[in-house]
Length: 563
Image (tube, rainbow, N blue to C red; front, side, top):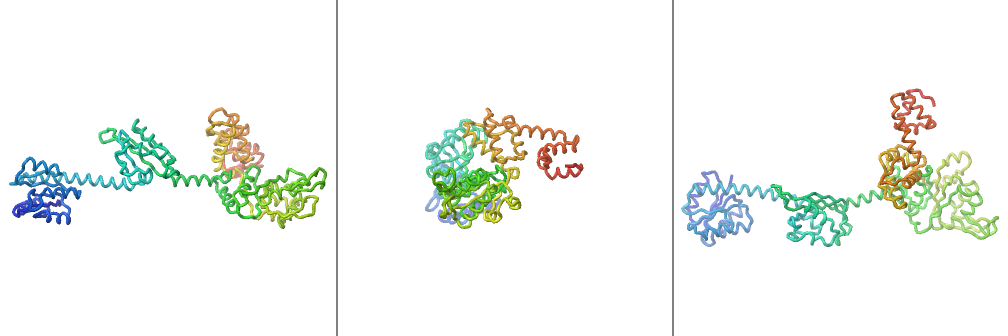
């Protein structure tokens, strides 16, 4: 029910109006003067105020002014006994909805009342819309800035102050003049939208603002079109992505640990091992096939730990004879053997305070194994031809692509040395067991060879990607690196295709495609041909056919294929 306040110092007019409006279904309150009216206004919300201009003390015009000061969404109709031009004009100029003259005609009063009520309903709806819009505007965490066609700021929200350092005091100012302390790319985007009336989006833009140099944002601009389809300006939405960018950077860093690349679960486990072992002095045995990156794991253990300020010394135990390896590891004195023309310190002494990597430890001769066992137990050794003991503080990391347990059974490797070395074992998986890492490795090598060969290749074709994902990679990551380097040398376009790869990959692709075409014609024959081509290796045959290993085992059993 609409509520009306009647303000008049004549009691009979108050009574007449009150009785009239009650009969018309309105709720009515009355006041006899300015002070009485303000008390009523403080106590209740009114949909219409009827105020006599001439009151005792302050006038109806003062009531009107107070309504405007309080920003009440309530139309005020003035009642006057002398409706002169100046009186009416002043009332309307100050915001009165209308005025009626005494003696008041009730039908005219009702017409004005209904019109005022409609106006109030529309104003309430507009205010509700404005309030909702303002609430949304304030609640959005993205910075929102609107400009007109001349790039003058029309409106901003609270978030703009935190993200763009633009407050509502900036309304009416040139947007470009406000953005002089940052990279300014959003100015270009907004100007482009104003010019072309097209939205623009920029992802992960570095603001480089004086107050927040590390801030990363995503910028969106949109044209402002009114309900008549007229272009009026543009809106800029800036989202702070600094935290997200930080998380993405952290994820990228987690996919790479000291040149080791891997997002797979197995590689993440290795990353955790490295982080746990980096500052521990225990001996570590790193196992895995050739080309899997064992040396990179050893380097990560050294450079991530507290010994990184000292040297990491590497020795390939399979590359030297017994005598030369002993001299290389422990050093010798002049004349200790033929060719020993001067004293020489060994690799263990060179690595004092740091790390020594014993690569291909499985090929170490038995005689040297004994001396190594003593170094691991007592941290001392003697140079060849010398009896004086040398003490060193060295962390030992060993690598092998061989099965040391099998070598122990064959009497080629000391069991006690194996347990000394294998305090903690890190087994680096072959590439065929971590294929989800292949796309990351491809990106890494593309960037690496673009820099090395001074090229600008964007990536690999879909066929190459599929071959890389299906191929078994017997040479592991080293084979992939060599294959891509070969491709970079031959490729004179933006994308590497099959013809740029070594022949083994194109042959693999052709063979697999041929087998797949034959499948269903004589499935048993095709499987037998694949097994023959793979020299009986079921895993390789399954890859040639593009089926799972479990599936090929089932097919072999189903067709009674003899191997």
